[in-house]
Image (tube, rainbow, N blue to C red; front, side):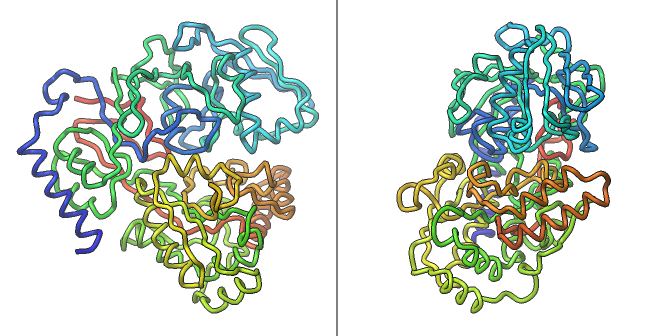
Length: 533
C-alpha cells in the first residue's frame, strides 16, 4: 500500500472511530460554545515574529500584535493603528499620529515611544527595514501619540513597508520588549491586537491558546485582510497541533476541531463527502515552492553546483508530490514572482525548462569540485508539502551523484537550525525546503528570499551585485513599465546566480465545519469576522 492510499484508509478509519467510539468533545458538551479549535499548518515552536520568519509564527502574531498599517485584499496598505500621517514636501520626513485609546494587553497605553522601539528592532531583520535604516537620520517620539521619521532621501514605499504581509512584519510591541536584541527571542508576549496570548496554556507541540481582548478598539471600516475593523466574536481560540494528516482529518469530521488550515490534497475528496465539512482554496494567490541553498559552504558556495541542481530539477515531480495530479492546483513556473500578477516574468528562466539534463548536471558538479561529501538536507516531517519536496530532493541529488544526509525533523527545528552559519557537519546545513506565499511574491519589496546582500540576506546568505542592482532599479522605477523591466532583469539575475530554485507554483485547500462562517481565502487565516453556531 502506497503512502497516499495509507493516508486515505487511516483517515477513513479515524473518522469512523471519531463518530462511534470517542467521548463527545468539549464543544459538543456545550462548555465552550464560543471556542474555536483550529489546526494550524505547523507547531508554534517559538513566538517572536521579528526574530524569525516562519509563517506559522506570523499567523499567530497578527492576533496578538497590531501594525501601523495593514495590507487589504487589493494588496494596498491602509491605516491601522495610525490615525493619520503627514509627509514633507521633499518626501524625506514622515510624521505619524496614533489612534486614540490604543492599549496593550497589560492595560498600558500604546505610546509613540513603543512604536519607535518596535521599528528599530524590526529594521535590523527586515529587508525593507534595512533599506530604511540605511537612509535614516532620526526616528523619534514627538509626544505620546506622535512620532517623526526623518530620512536622507525619499522612500516612496514607506506605507507598504509598514503594512506588508511578508515576514518579518512591522509589529508594534511595548518598548520594554522591543528593546530586546533582534537576534534574541522575546520571552513575554504582550501586544495590542484583538486577541491575547495565554502563555500559561501554551504547550509547544500540543497547543497554543488565545483569548479575545476586551479592550481592543477596532477601526470603523469593514475588515479586509490586515486592514479595517478586526472584530473578533469568538471568546477563545485554541490552536491544536496535529502533524498527522489522518488524525487531523478524523478530528475535523468528528467535530473535535472546527477548522484545518492545510488538509492534505489526497484527503479532500473524503472531506467533501462529509455534509458537515466545507472545503475551498486556502489562498487564490497560491505559493511558490523553494529549494534553498546555503551559499556559505561547499559545494553550493560555487554557482556551478547550484546550476547543476537547477538543470536537473523537474518542477512537475515536486508539484505532483506536493498536491497530486489536479492541474487546477499547480503549474510549472520559471519565475520568482507570482503567476497572474502584473510583474510576473519568466525572463532568464530557461534553466528550469525543457528536458532535464542529468549528465550535464553531473559534469558541472565535477567542475565545481564536488567530491562526494554528504549534503545535509533538512526536511520537516510535520509539514506535508515540505516532506514531499524533501523526498523528491533526496532522489534528485542522488541521481546527479551526490551523497545525501537526509535529516528528518520537525519544522520548528528547521526554523532554528537554518539560522546557523556553522559548517553542515557541525550543526549547519546545505539545503532546506520552504514555500513563499504568492501574496508576498508580487514584487521585489516584499520578498525577503530574493535578497542577495550577503550577511543581510535571508537564510543561505547569497551575495550578488546584479540581483541587488536590479532590485534598486525597481524601487526607483517611475511607472509600471519601468517596474516590469527591472523585474525582468532581476528574474534573469536571480537565475544566473541561482539564489534559490523555485520548485513550482501551487495552491492548497483549507477545510472547516459548516457551523463556522466567515472563512475566506487569504495568505493568512484571519479570525476576525469568524462566527460559530
